[in-house]
Image 1 (cartoon, rainbow, N blue to C red):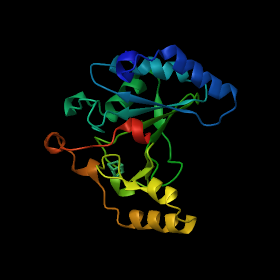
Image 2 (image 1 turned 30 degrees about the horizontal axis):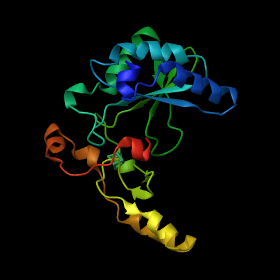
Image 3 (image 1 turned 90 degrees about the vertical axis):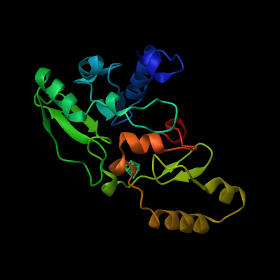
Image 4 (image 1 turned 180 degrees about the vertical axis):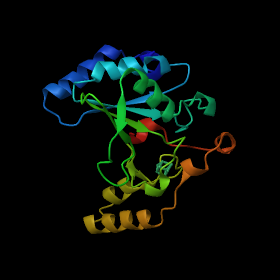
Length: 207
Ligand code: SF4
């Protein structure tokens, strides 16, 4: 399942070894993002929670999103977070926790037995655009104001062209203050189908 999902035949053992290496190196607050796709990995969610329960590592379940053009997104493939919360709660009772800070993307839940924390990122069923404070830099140096943006602002050109730190700072400020993105609030199956043209892939901009 893992190899199918990552598209590049990457084995789960290597990922788990990487997570363990991060833990052994003392990296605090490790979070594991798990995108949930109906009919693909929804039966694994309890097992994943079990694997990390009591380790201090936080699993965050993410609703499947229509980022980019390569993942064949359909609304029917989205498993709403509330369903996952209910499923986990039936096996391992959990309760909501307060956010760590304003605009935190994941809703925090904790095991009632105190053995750890889970997160739920409900971008499709409960969009949080109004509080979104994220800006993303792609691997080729473009700034994107939204995961679903089609155009990025070319910071690399400024850097290579000798722009000063102050000029770059001002440019980022201008980009941010013109921001009115709220894609997830207006998403429907129809708006997704109607989107054409180039779209940034998740692998270019991280999560
Ligand atoms: S759709 Fe865009 S604006 Fe809305 S939460 Fe996601 S990244 Fe932020």
